[in-house]
Length: 236
Figure 1 (cartoon, rainbow, N blue to C red):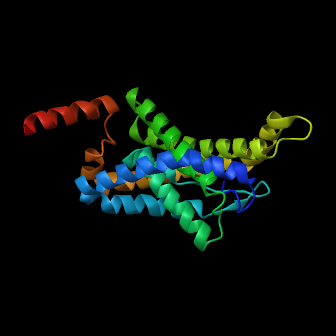
Figure 2: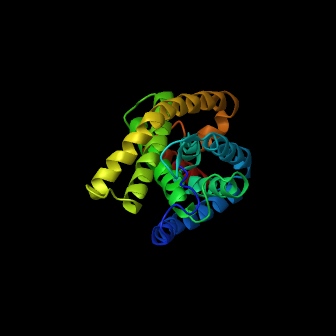
Figure 3: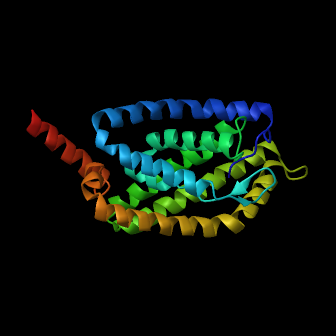
């Protein structure tokens, strides 16, 4: 997924950076509020960031100028919501660009948009939708992580197709080419990431059930809002 340094035309690199910036700024505010109001979340935040860093560093060469790998963003999105994951993902991508030569600074905005913004939002939306209709927690976790991973590569395919349209068939042809090449490695990786995320969530349920309850992982969104309103009413 990480598009390599200097691979995108300057105009595209700037445009993706501008598109990503508001989400990251909003995420910084959300992260600051979470740490301020719930300092006990620090360990889980660090674990979510580390999970993303380790998984997304396991790269497999793919399309020229890019690579395939797990993303690890589904777990953090489920635990802390997508805005916070935008910050954790950006930090991960920045460190990898500087320390591992994985991705790059000029393509940071594009990589953030696909992996740290679209992926978490897509995975979280699927997770919440499934939970709303009573799907078991671990099944919803699997599909949330699976979609977070796969949607990242769909966006990367769009980014590359926009930058390098096919000479004969234009954007649609390039999108089909990039998407089909990514699919060979990414679908199995997305399945593997979903299973690994389920395993990690099972461990968290055993060791940090109180934190998961506070974060609303066991509840549907409607139930979480109702419980929060009742708690605030009692406090008043």
